[in-house]
Amino acid sequence: TEDDIKKNLDQSWVKDDSFVPLKKVKPDQKKLVSEATSLQGVTRTNVSSRYYPYGEKTAHLTGYVRAITAEELKKKKDGTYSDTSNIGIAGLENVYEDKLRGTTGWKIYVPQTGEVIAEKKAKDGEDLHLTIDINTQTKLYDELKDDSGTAVGLQPKTGETLALVSAPSYDPNGFIFGWSDKEWKKLNEDKNNPFSAKFNKTYAPGSTIKPIAAAIGIKNGTLKADEKKTIKGKEWQKDSSWGGYSVTRVSESLQQVDLENALITSDNIYFAQNALDMGAENFTKGLNTFGFSEDIPYEFPTQKSSIANDKLDS
Image (tube, rainbow, N blue to C red; front, top):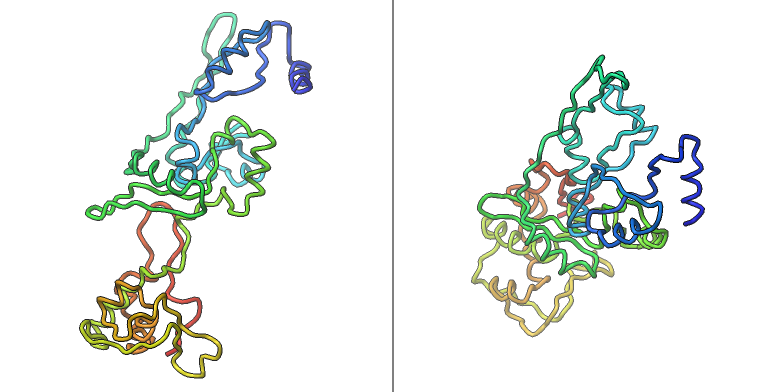
């Protein structure tokens, strides 16, 4: 606004020939730069800055940097940070802050003669090379961007991560180049929390647990793949001790259900009975053989999976 411009120009250090920074713009805003610099008294200078070219598509993966706060600076007592430092706040920027961050250089010299009295060379941080495939990342994000959800792409042969996507998302460049009031308000009022990554949280697995439950039942000998269970109706409960709770399946068209048909129709009742047949202890042991409750050696922080919120009852 005009008031913002005047406020910047009225700073005590400003002289007639001073370059007064008004706005840092993204590299892709060439039209804006061209229009602004065509105005009398407006010029530009190049600066070094973080820039996230894929914006919303990779926001929760890359994270972002921002100016360090006074509270954060107090915790950084090793002298590598100052009140003008930026710091990684989320995503890989936060996970690899120590590696990405270089060492600030400085020089003391005599302007009139150019004589250097003392100097410390700046040192760049490390480069990171990811296994992320941007085509996979982009495709998954485009599928999810209008919804609330998450998608992860893995290379099954090597375990490499090809994509980590969370939606809704935000443009991390906003923390570098600024937000409009409208953008900031929209993001903060979104009930689906676009600033929070969903791909490293824990969720109920839904029907993807059924093949695992079947494998455990077969190994325990409590489930035979070709043996049919008689299941009538869409709802079922073990006995009256369940009170008002019952297991519901999608369709009641099949009454004689074997494993193949149970997987095809995703029969909730069949797999609930399978779990009860093997018992809580055997089911838990079986799930643990598939890696449940283990700490995953994964560099991006993830929440530890759990089999149940409370102890399983038989």
